[in-house]
Image 1 (cartoon, helix red, strand yellow):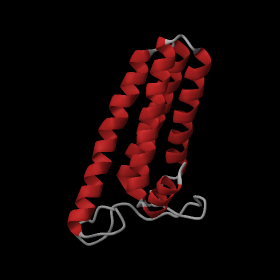
Image 2 (spheres, rainbow, N blue to C red):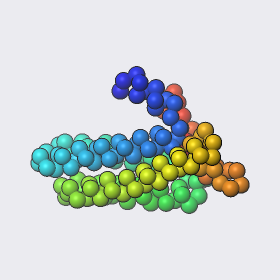
Image 3 (spheres, rainbow, N blue to C red):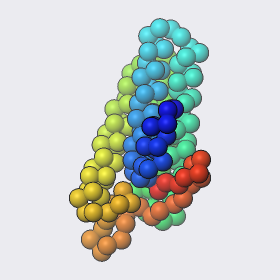
Image 4 (cartoon, rainbow, N blue to C red):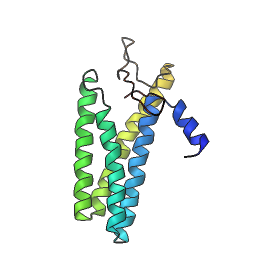
Length: 151
């Protein structure tokens, strides 16, 4: 990663980092599809593993205690995507990988809306603000090479 990219990630909000992680899942699923087309099982497994690692990270860093229904829904989503990736890898299935991409892009768009709503509300945390003034996503710090982000 070059210095510019590292700086951008250091300055990113939790929602922006989440969106970047979703982009990583899509990128690795596209690599898995390419590997399926080339009949390259080793590359397929490597790409799927990287995407699964991201999903596991997202799952582990969810604040399930304070996140309420959104955290529950994301837990189920991540579990389903992990299972679909595993099925796709085992079946060498382009279709399953494409389904993962479609689902991740859909949820990514919801995160983009959260980011846009936060900007419109003037919140710097990148978290949606509820009518009572509380944030919808409690902040949770995670060691990320000297930084922290919210989930």
